Length: 293
Image (tube, rainbow, N blue to C red):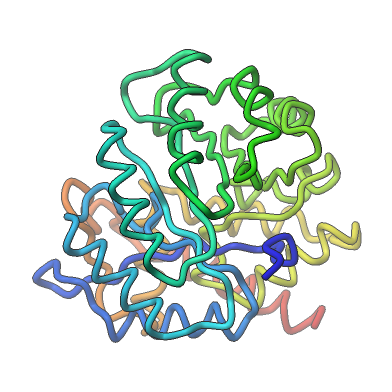
């Protein structure tokens, strides 16, 4: 399977029941919506609240998705602070029918270029599958080093980068450092700007709520035919009025795709006091799709 054929990857949410256990029935609906829209599946990323789930929960989620046998490729998040723990996670995943890994810069420790290089190299050496390196300094407190990226650019398992710092200039730096590897936008609202700068596609939160609509959005951005930037910027920003994935889970619950908007601690759906922003965004995106389809 050529992963570069998938311009849109959905950072799939983890639906929960009121007792904070995984809602597999709702998860099945979410995955089926993405699969039928021909979107790649990112399971257990930050939008899935992966760091707030225990090992048994994470294993049950990925095993459930794999057993569904979606036609779309499956990428799995690998992130934390303990290297041996992450290598053990990869060892477990290697036994499953997954296609790629998302490797995030270590959280909290703020490693420099050499520390980052050693971290990513150790994980990619331990893997037999393509890896996407993930820059998200807003969550990790450190930017991914372009020096480390450049040193890793010829690694057999270095496939792509997800750039989520919010900077087109930073994106261009990673594009240069990656030596021709794919660089994906990690901010829904910035996809038009990143596409103009050479992005291979989008790793998306919005496509949880709007799978077919976001697929078309990305397609138009890459073809340079997109002309609804104000609408999509406002819609995308509505999903970040409080901590991700609180708003998108609220919208999915309002639409009946998932049964509850419940979050794993320390996040709480009660921090979002009104669904109006996401419901207005949903109406606008739905109208746009009907008009341009």
